[in-house]
Image (tube, rainbow, N blue to C red):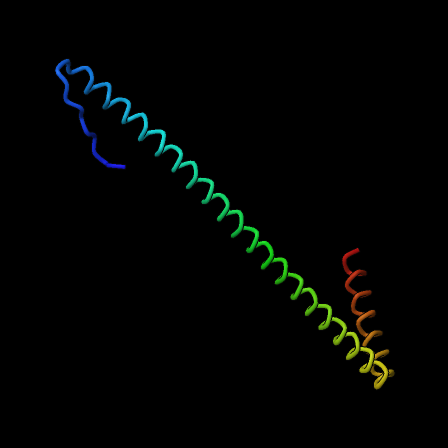
Length: 109
């Protein structure tokens, strides 16, 4: 398919114009189809990339949630060990915190 118009020379002159119009319509139809195909490919590619990003983000969130669960479990185990090793100290600290909270609440009233 050529990119230039090829006039058909005849004696009446109207045939050349008609040929140009028909060729322009044909090229317009071909270009319109190509643009539609390209738009479809762009849409499909964008959809695939969004799906990939969504999957990656979901995996990342899941991994971070698992890490936080592990850290919380480790912290809980460490706290339990600390309380079991130092029960008197733990009760004293809890009593001091309770006393401070009580004093703060009392001053507000």
